[in-house]
Image (cartoon, rainbow over all chains, first blue to last red; front, side, top):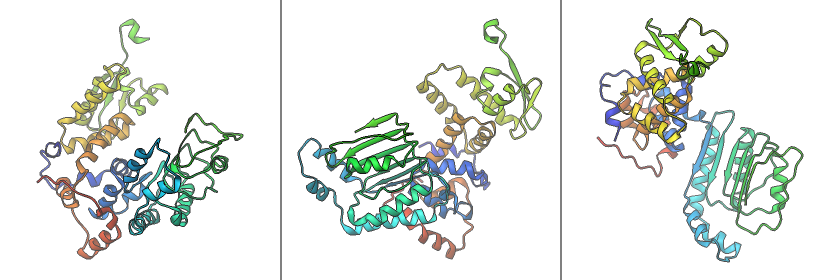
Amino acid sequence: MCAERIFAGNDDDDDRISQLPDDILVDILCLLSLKEAGRTSVLSTRWINLWKHTPSLDFDGEISFEAKLKESMGKDIPLEELEKLCKLPKSKRRKYTEWVNSVIQSHKSPTLKQFRLRYALDTSDKNSITLWLQFASSRQVQSLELFAPGSMAFDFKRLKELFFKHVNVSGGSIESFLRNCPLLEKLTVHSLGKLSKLEVCGSSLVLKHLEI
Amino acid sequence: MAAETGTPTTLTLKSNDDELFSVAESAAILSVTIRNMVEDGCAGGVIPLDNVDGKTLASVITYMNGISAIPADEEKKKSYRDKFLSDKDFETLADMVLAANYLNMSCLMDAVSAKIAQVMEKKSVGWVRRKFGIENDYTPEEEAAVKEEHKWTFEGVETDDDN
């Protein structure tokens, strides 16, 4: 690939990349997956903390359930059945939970543009999810995407985009969530259950895009 | 206005090693730094760019002229950027990303950053160190500790080192 070409003529040991300023290196790390960005911490002491400043956290876990859900679209499969279909073994879920916890414990960026959780967690992971939502809220997240049930009593003053992907939520809980998101511009709800009624209201809601 | 009268305004840019370059204002204002100077009326004489050397500035100006000659067509602009960067070695890319940052040219910044990130993608730590000449200054114990702390970054990851 182009790698060989890029390094043509770079025979000396001059470590130009490590001499670039932090903000440029963080920009570059933002273009890598979270795991790849995190792995650069092992390169040298210069790199140990750089990935912790990326403003986007995308926990792309095992997403095989997304295909299963797509298959079941249109078929009238009961909710409990669907949940069973997507459920992953406890060991896998624990691994994912540990991963997210370990990252958010060391992550240093004061604000987040994006926080994305993609995994078939379930109600037994409620405490962790609550913790993650609190984290996202404390970092003034702008775009939040989650696949998980969970409590929604948080304040998301800076949130502009919100995706509920296959989350088992009721219209009522979305409504109460929206009251905490005065700047929300884009709302996407792909609900597992049937959404019977959704009232979007709020004094300062600036919603521009709604997809259900 | 200038374009209508057939005499486009040109600016004179000066690199930190005292080379002078003439460039059309319409191309130069791709740089927000330069645009601000023009808008503030401080671009009358020579514009000194203290953080960019002549070789890099020449290259950035080639880019400015090339990209501003393309009408608003994101596809064409992208393919111009790819072609422009395709024969640059890493030294040049590093100079270019620093210059783009200083000149506040987000389109060039993003393109060069993406190019550098692409090189690191799916590569092992050892490969990246060798290719970029990064010296491992950890003691073996420290390195083991950092690896342990970041062991999630090695899980389920396949690298495709090609040397």
